[in-house]
Length: 590
Ligand SMILES: Cc1cc2nc3c(=O)[nH]c(=O)nc-3n(C[C@H](O)[C@H](O)[C@H](O)COP(=O)(O)OP(=O)(O)OC[C@H]3O[C@@H](n4cnc5c(N)ncnc54)[C@H](O)[C@@H]3O)c2cc1C
Image (tube, rainbow, N blue to C red; front, side, top):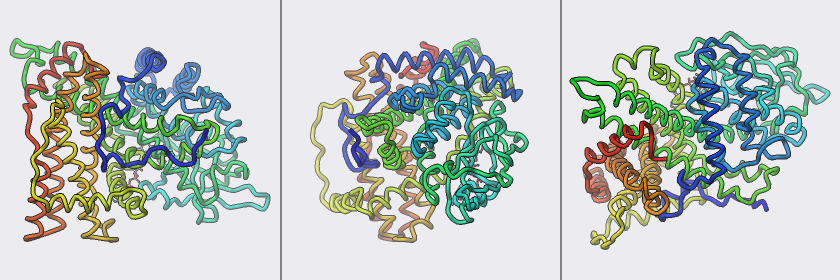
């Protein structure tokens, strides 16, 4: 039954080799997952995407009907224990659903606020009474939830919230304040609201719309997601029963940040689902559209784009499923009605969740930008969905913690754990210094077809450790002020986790998905090749910010020695990927 510590150590992949066979991949989804996938896809395509234009008129009755339909189909129940009306499925099921709903743009965002930002904090922090009272209604879609953390003056600095909760003699609280940019704000029935008790103790509350003093402001005029409600939520002396404190008074940051960890992970899942659909649109358009008497898909410049879209989506997808495997492994034997281990595991995987959030949101922006470009003039007008996708996705880099904040969190969290002794990063940095000083040794001969890629990934891990270790040494406690260096370190970490996951998945495909193995190999090889250049550039910039003169020259020489990666013919590989995506008229690697 429940163990008290997570079975996995977040960030450990940075310090160890990743054996073939050790990571979860989409190729390991079982028949039940595939059935759920089919249900979610049919719902997304036939009921949501088909009604998109109507939803964009802000028809919230339609939004409610879609929520109720998702409830009937069990799509919001995956993460919820059976005891509270849920299906109690593994996280892989949740990922499969999230990926399909990810193609729904506006409704995807509404769905995320319901499942990731309202249901999840209740599952993780709710009392028995709160779960009994609210989860069933939320899972069925009878009630809609919203998450009220941001305020006009506090977005990234969420703990700087001004909303106040004043404790009354009878134990209840009176809440006042105004929350901003709240998804589902216009029609939600239940709000997870963060406010400071007596102006000091940051705390989460469950606030029903029916409580006197709760109201929604006007709908925001947004760049995209026009079919999703985003409003201020105004609280004017709202009396909230003592039983509606979610978690503990003064511990609202735990509710907020744990929720955001899962939200970040799920944002990447949705981005991946959206990217797969857009890649299909690009492939079909490129096959149909003729210029100079040929389909544009036959031009090298377009093949490059199609190939690169597939490579980036494959890398993010590989990280998502690997992280899903870590979650499911850690939670395998836990008692679903005791959320302690779930909370601990989400906290443990905070770095992976931030990596996924940044990588997923930037991958989809790349894919959707190239989708517009491949559609040419048709990409810029509303007759094709490319234009809407492009606008809808931009916010992904802003909400669930901006990408800047998430970048800072990655190295910051790893270093904090290293200093507390939870991650042997300092020992690794020391042994790397010894390795760099030692005379070079000849590489062992190997018949592993991924030998070059594995060496490259190992070099990426060392480059990450080198930059993190030197930054800790150089700046000590002032490192938090060096955001540029931290952001370069984050870029290296993202490429390293992505390359490691893509190569391991492609190597596993040799036995687990032989029909896809050659294409997955191409995708992994291109990713590693280009990541080498990015990592080298980021590490050089970081070193140049930290050192000068002989110290800089010595560290640059060490970096060059580490990153000796043989380039591959990425033109041929991207062309093969592009031809395959056009032949199959859609994303083909899962
Ligand atoms: C469509 C939409 C839906 C949303 N839904 C919700 C919701 O349901 N619930 C909710 O609570 N919120 C929601 N938000 C709010 C969202 O989470 C915030 O907009 C986001 O956290 C950023 O806060 P901000 O807008 O105040 O930007 P700011 O925090 O002012 O940031 C502005 C810029 O400065 C950078 N920056 C800020 N601080 C630092 C720092 N310390 N170091 C370096 N750079 C920094 C940021 O990265 C950003 O680039 C939503 C927003 C939108 C647009």
